[in-house]
Length: 265
Image (cartoon, rainbow, N blue to C red; front, side, top):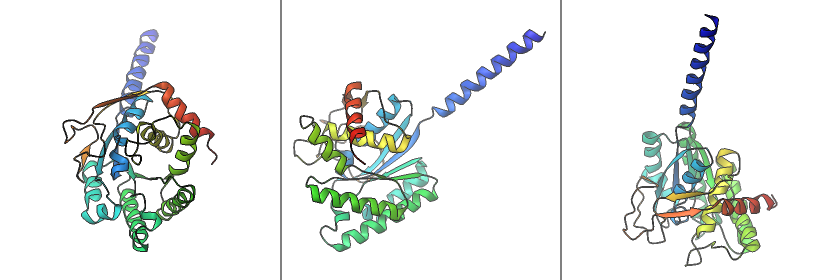
């Protein structure tokens, strides 16, 4: 009799453990808001595929448009609407490259900082973890100033800052043969999209990824057909000639990770 009770108890414990495991594996929702620096290469889908392969399931959505600034998304209410309807656990904001460098004028800085604070607060009010993902500049002095201003804006908004510009300069100097940029020499190439995703993975999940992965989603170029409406990152592309798959190997992920770990902080 006692043996039977023990067996039943063990079966119950196993069932409870399996149920708990299923709950923890439910994908977290991530919402990306930004411009072509987000959608070229499809960073949201890349981050989701990387997270999935490394044991942290994520379902990514995005509100993106070429040349968009955060104050536009604050004005049109798109982010607030998505926070209310989709209830994302993670909100990743990326500002247009020059806005926080006061380009074309001082008003750009003021608008950017105000929008970042308001969107960060909206995220917090929804119980969402909010991150500012940095942009980048190639010139050393401009890059250092950009990182300084982005870090200050994130601190003012009370959210973590995921730096890109200086780690990109370091990594691209160490491995100039990698495809850091698209054919236009400005937008992210596969290596930069991977670097962005690795930096985000560390910020969001608290550790570097180790495993490679395949992104089965549109791999957008600069001509995307996207507008600033909410869409799943793996939804069919508006343009039928958009590539739909890219694979990053274990070795590629580990190489980028090693570069980031070696970068002075």
